[in-house]
Image (cartoon, rainbow, N blue to C red):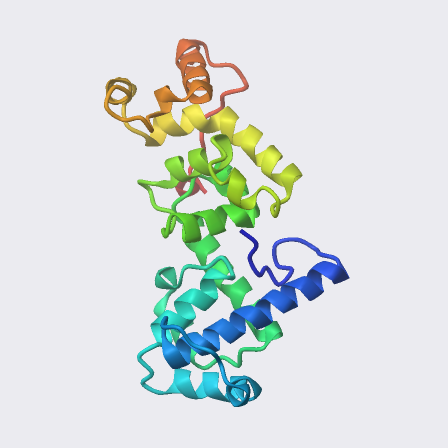
Length: 247
């Protein structure tokens, strides 16, 4: 899944920049069509394309019933799930001039909002996960969720340790950055489970009725079993997790 990054995820070449702008233009055409016609079949007229910016502005400033449809589908192409945005940013979107540069600034602002909200929830040691912007895209687009106290362990597990988004984002993300974060998360995952997850006894029981249980994945079973075997003789590899409340 190739999304429009505006170069906010990593530096890109002139060729990648031109490709990004091309995808943006195509997405903006679809945005225009969605505002005018909704999700029904349509073919934009030449005059609609030539007056694209004016029509978009007019539709967003009025009582157009297709605003939600248009913005939702447009922002998905940026890796952003519209429903998760704050009321303030949703209001800003109604008054935005939809140039490539303006959308670049707005997309960065939306990702930063997600990151700031996530940092209120995540333990400090897992902040590094937010450096991989495709992890945020995974949360928003694939899972349609913000990071919460009840889901952050599973989100980290699915994206980094089990690499469930490999077929979707492996050709886009920075493999070195992903690998570094993955190794760290594998190292501290048992501590995260021990401090913030359900009890091990319950977890072991649930493996019989839940195929997605940690103990039904060889790699997770190995690191969890190893951790609990050594829990009473902790070494320097397993240090206490420092939660953001401790800062």
